[in-house]
Image 1 (cartoon, rainbow, N blue to C red):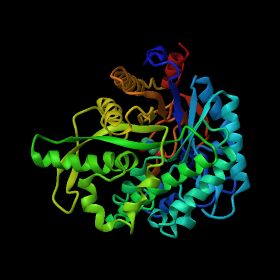
Image 2 (cartoon, helix red, strand yellow):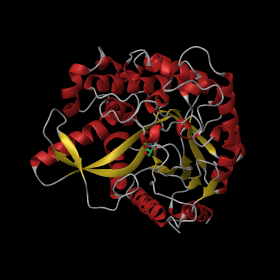
Image 3 (cartoon, helix red, strand yellow):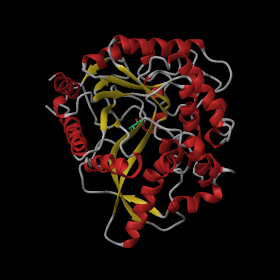
Image 4 (spheres, helix red, strand yellow):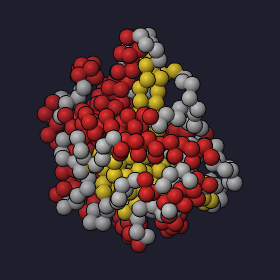
Length: 437
Ligand code: IFM
């Protein structure tokens, strides 16, 4: 058994996550084109040019998928709504089929005693908005607020919790500075604009949802532990910068009303006009903070312009993603976030899991070990006083791993992408037994 439910506090929420574009199938139900469709259609961006037009066909198979979540003994299910499905043009008319789908989906969760944990944006930006500059456009917070009102006006009365944006670092930095995700930009000014507009959009969405009478609203950020490659001051400085734009930037804005000095000193000339006046919006009060955690990175100084650093290989066992398994990082973030930023606010591990080259029938021992180690790290943090209220497995199903296509398998349930057959893995069964104990 990888863990025991009874080792966690009363009411601790065990959940599994997916996201709209990664599983639903955007070719169905009147969803608009997204910037992931155009990114994938451009050679060199996505392995084998794979896209999410069919994905796991969850749009048609959601009942079966939610049965799997219920039968595993989960308390909740973390899902996202697709902006492009709800508003195919990003603005203006809503797609009635899209609204009906999320209505059915939430009711289907409730019918199975699964708490619906919603996210408003998990990366599938409608192309009509991408054409207008996407997250670089200062009107994004207004458009995001309208989208929030439209979808939460329909399902907000029944969701257990909601966070506006999944992993602002990925939406901002990974997509606009590193160019690994749509829209595939590598530009410091685009990055600064996007990171700020994401945060303002987050705040506007929280305001809209409060206005609708919703509660249990939070933010979901991702974290990576930055380990200096050696004891040199230069390595320490490089790791500090990595930690700054990855881990401290978004929390600084949300909880301290400022960006970390070491990062904003560099980004300031590239920030949108009047950015200093937006922190009241960004700091709309939250009810919980979500942490997505997978790995650490070993950071070394490098030549070249800021941030003048590079990732180097570390010695620990790795997942199919090439990511080192480092559970101490999760313990670090749960205690550090509580101490430094959120100070008693409930924390949720909103994503954690590993990719493995699974085939049906394999024993899946690596995934179970990964889960056991990270749940033990979570428990240690709780024992030391971190107010951790839940843990979410990424992911319920094998799915579309963005630029890496369908090859990286994070699911507790195997999906055959030819037949779409679902087969629970050994980890699914072991976790189900642990949750039932
Ligand atoms: O698949 C992604 C997910 O969309 C966001 N968090 C990390 C996961 C694994 O890379």
